[in-house]
Image (cartoon, rainbow, N blue to C red):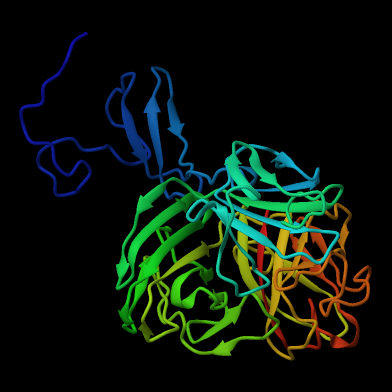
Length: 430
């Protein structure tokens, strides 16, 4: 094989002022006689949103190199759902596509009043926290989650389902997310920062320690994503603040308000997340730490055709179409029909009904999804937000190719679409 050695400096390949090195020919025509393998930048032709097109000469004609942006992995390689019936012992659960090893697994007993059980790869499969409570983590190496596997996860329970993941004959749902390999992160004041990042799909898990001392107002952690997260869910899980609640940030509310995943309350005015930008998340809810606490955070941003984080305004007595395209109005890019939606009344008339409502197409594959669970409630599926009465044909949304349609609820009770003018936030995943 012949080799070519370049002995002079190659600089600034396409700069107009370049006097040395290589320069890419531009324009819509080539004045000389092209030879096979030559390339040019054709400024007279656009391609895939670019104002020009890179071309190569194949010996006969100029052919385009397509200007195609890299795409996110398919949504089922990032998020998937498992529905299963427990066996009262140990079993491996596979998601519908079974295409990845999850880093976050969230399981709920659909038939009984049992807590939501959440485990992640940052804390380890044996450590669970409950979205409907402020408890510190529960660690059990025998029961609950045993491992995260390729295509799903393994759980162990007793026949009665006392560990809320695999009771005999009990129906469950498991929502699973893929993050990434563990890497060292950084932060201001916070220590032991680790990141698990899925940058192409807009999701990361970050774990860190709140050390002993006075917490500065600029305390923060780096989220590892390519842009600012639009939804941040946090939980201290041990130490002094282990029983502190689920502080939650939404970009629709800004940095001066927060929500709590574990309750029905609307947004509270307090800068628990004073800064959220393309690099870091400011996290400040306590000014002093006398005993160190560890915190886990789940960070999300929108990605075309994969997931959308946004908000909508309720209409009194009328349905609301929520669009999952980039503009949020049906005119943008990347719209999709969701398989999962979680939504919450953020600004408006809070009541016992207004929890974190969860729908998915695996539990309710019909056009109308009226079989909700609530992240802040331990109740079985299919009930109203206050825990009483059937939600059938009352609390429902309809998944469609543009996003989802939210029907009004009676008496403006507020689960999904109360009296006009209230703000709801949502997470929708394809």
